[in-house]
Length: 207
Image (cartoon, one colour):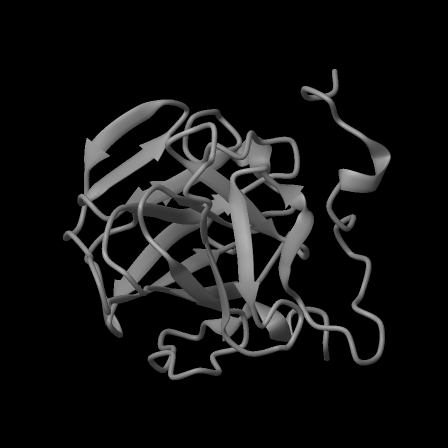
C-alpha cells in the first residue's frame, strides 16, 4: 500500500537510474515535509543548507536525498550542524516515513547521542552540536550503518540491516528539530576525509 498522499511526482528517483550528464545528487524538494526550508546550494554539487521553517506545523521535519545506493559498496555523506539544536541523520528506503528512525525502513542517529530505528531509541555514540561534522556511512557488503564525528569513527556499528533489506535502495535522510544543517554528498565544503574504503555517495554509479 502507498503512503499518505503519495503521488507519482514525489517518488524518489528509482534505484539504479544513473544521474544524467551535469546532474548531481541533491536534497529532493519533492521528497521532504512541508516544514522543511531548502536554503541554498540545492543541486549545486556543493554544501546544501536547510532548516525547519519557524512556522512549521510539526516540531521536526525531514528531507531525503534524491539518489539512493543498493546492493554493494561503502557509501557516505556528511552533515554539519550549523546552528546548534537537535537533528537526526541516517538512511532510509523510499517507502519510509520522513520521520527518520520511526519505522522499520529508516535508521537515524541524533545529536543527543541516541540512535533510532522502528521507533526504538537507544543511547549511541556521542552528542553532537554546533559546528560538528557527522559523516553517515553505509557498508552494503556488511549491511551495516556507522558514523564518524569530525572525522573520527564512532566505535561499533550503529545498525546492522536485516538480510531482507538486501537490494533495497537506501537514501540519505536528515530529520531536523531546531538545527539549521548543511550537507555534502561529494565531500566538498570541508568534509573530513573518508577512511576504510568508503566513497562519497555522489560517486555511486559514476564508474
